[in-house]
Length: 189
Image (cartoon, rainbow, N blue to C red; front, top):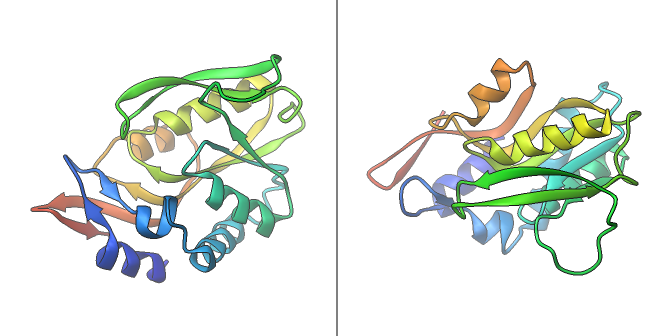
């Protein structure tokens, strides 16, 4: 998606290591029009897959998941990873390690919102090491559902996440792919 690539190259900031900050348009201050177009592009890529739900994990993937779900005409579900507020005690859970936050957390989805009849599209903002995506795949598996694929705004191909998922036979679609970070510059494929 050329528009997203231009925004990454002009506005994204490289942090420590190869962390890419896109919070100025993607996951803190959200460019809603851009996000809507991104959701439409991802939905178009997965049309015909009989998707019944879009699944993400809080919080950075929620906006993209919602716009993708809207374009597909299905509900968006997000896995909670923080124990705040009410969550149904009858949940599917999976552990994941966050590359960005450098901590392990438990994802939880109420059993009311995923089941064996679901065909699920997993959506997230950035695919790096793939731990969040793998955790969401585990949630879908525990529910007995089927995974249509993993859709992300940005894939960091210099990390293992995308390769691991593809070796597992999971379809991965990214709107932009970062090949590497070099001298503080982002190099896209």
